[in-house]
Amino acid sequence: MSEQITVGVGAGARYLGVDRVIDLGPLHPSAHGAYRLRLTVTPELVITAAEPLVGHLHRGAEKLFEVRDYRQVLTLANRHDWLSAFCNELAVALAVERMTGMDVPARAQWLRALLCELNRLMAHMVFLTPLSPNAATYREGVQALMEEASGGRIHFMFNRIGGLREDVPAGWTERVATFLSTVDVTTLTVDFAALEGLGVLPYDDALAYGVTGPIGRASGVDFDLRRDDPLPAYRTLGFSPVVRTGGDAAARVRCLVDEVLKSVELARACLEQLPQGPVNLRLPKAIKAPEGSVYTRVEAPLGTSGVHLSSRGEKTPWRLKLRTPSFNNVQALSALLPGTKVDDLPAVLSSFAVVVGDIDK
Image (cartoon, rainbow, N blue to C red; front, side):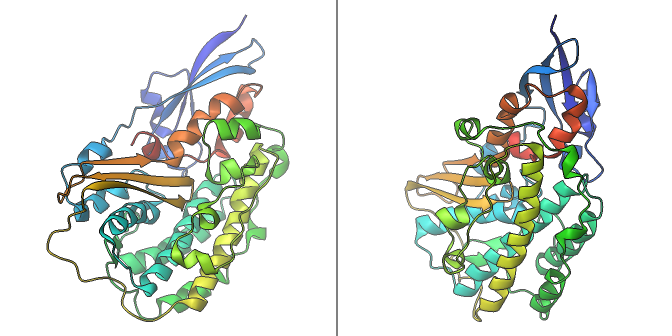
């Protein structure tokens, strides 16, 4: 006879009244929040049904946006996914710039692309660290570069409406180039054999749940906004995404590793083509988006990060709706977990990258 158990994921899950806690590692973002999985299991502890239970870290960001002007909105927008802070800021900045018809300087466009790739590299190394502890060295290296450029270690607050807050420090691009030359994914000690065949997410299910990012591409979903809806700088880089068809835990981790190489390649290209010039526009004291609505999206580390901005011509948004990758992606656990042994659950979940704040936005 089947029975139900509730598993908590994350260091804080022990306070949620669960039967079992899965803590995925000291650097895993689940340590900052928690979600639950209601599992139906057989007597042999094989999962036959899974239901993600979220909402324990509700942040109310979308309502907070409505009472802040557009400069203040950026401060909140980088916090729902604390590993994708730069990309989150950028999605909102793009929405306001598109509505107001701003022409962002070329240097700012290229620096944005470069910083997006460094942000992606940092996020992927955080997810890889529980599987390969030496990934923490690369994570620390790229995080130091992001901190040097922005002044922030996690919440960068480097984007501004119309460009960037300021130019990068003197010698920073050379230090980025030096760091990129040290990134060697062959030093990552991931045990792929232990992940083979676990937690398979079929292509059709990935499409049905709207799964994007490395998780979707590991299941054959050939979609990446850096190619399919690129920012200006990406249009000249000839980017092609990493796509695998296995859909299992090993394929998802291999996608993360391969995307590290892609990010290094793109960051080097950005350094080579980085133009001189200003990095921001001179703005009025109060920014007011005209009446109307717009949808913008960027390829964040975990997938499509979208912003639907609706304005009534005031200095605060009437509605600012977030489309976060983790919110869609976590629903797919109900499709990929059936057939998994409970003992294999930590291995499957360690390959399934989500950030709880990105779910409970």
